[in-house]
Length: 133
Image: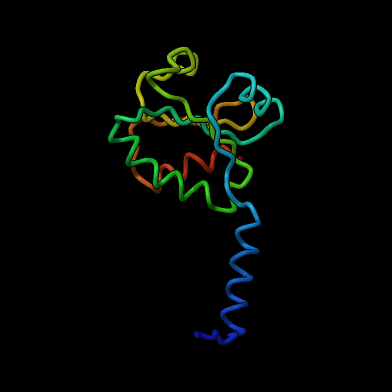
């Protein structure tokens, strides 16, 4: 029979890990709907609209950069709307996007910036930070 020895430092590390996972510092991600987007704009929230396609290699390169940014405390209030380039053409047109891999940031109702095809972590971070201004 195996016995386990209680190790206080291990217990403390596990407790801190559990506490950290219960605190949400992550951005809110959801599929775009006009109603939700309009509500977030009227509430004055920082918003990122991510127009992407599953087949797009540039979009795939943006995903880990965006995921990292979404987990940062500075972006905890960011609302992220994912728009599928292929199936949500009406939204793509309404946003004035011509291509997938388009990122558009808003603060409330005001567009603060956009980029298309960018895979540089520094410039994507700078774009996302404009939503918080």
